[in-house]
Length: 99
Image 1: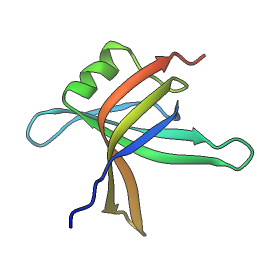
Image 2 (image 1 turned 180 degrees about the vertical axis):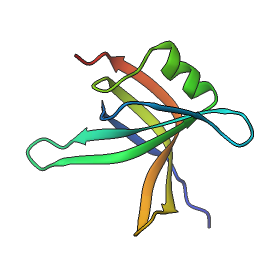
Image 3 (image 1 turned 120 degrees about the vertical axis):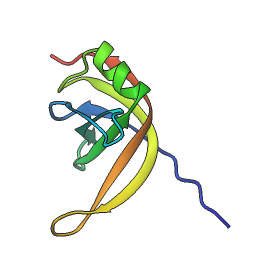
Image 4 (image 1 turned 30 degrees about the horizontal axis):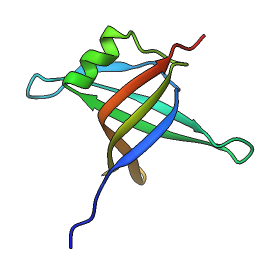
């Protein structure tokens, strides 16, 4: 039986948005995202966005400090020293602009 891979996170953009293009010429970007868990800790994850979601990010001029809700697919890839967990953005809503 197949599983369902849907991840929803809400938090702040924690780094500058790095714009790029894929080998196929499609728009792409990535950024760190901070999920504040109150008194427990803050979780940081990498978000990767493509195509139409990149256009939303550009149009809204999303930057570090902005609050957003992101839905996507949880993914793993091999890093230099260990496995890196990331979210491939399928939908993004930018709620408010940071300071």
